[in-house]
Length: 55
Image (cartoon, rainbow, N blue to C red; front, side, top):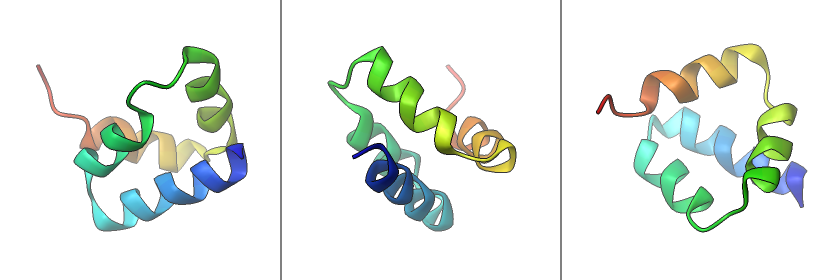
């Protein structure tokens, strides 16, 4: 399941869509988020951080 969700996050990165990433992770546990995060490459993680809106 983690791999499937990582693929979905990668699609969101390609689409440059923070809203899609946020929707996929909504209501998920920190453990789940960490397991998906660990599958992403360093570059993908960097891109996710850049897509996240600054508060």
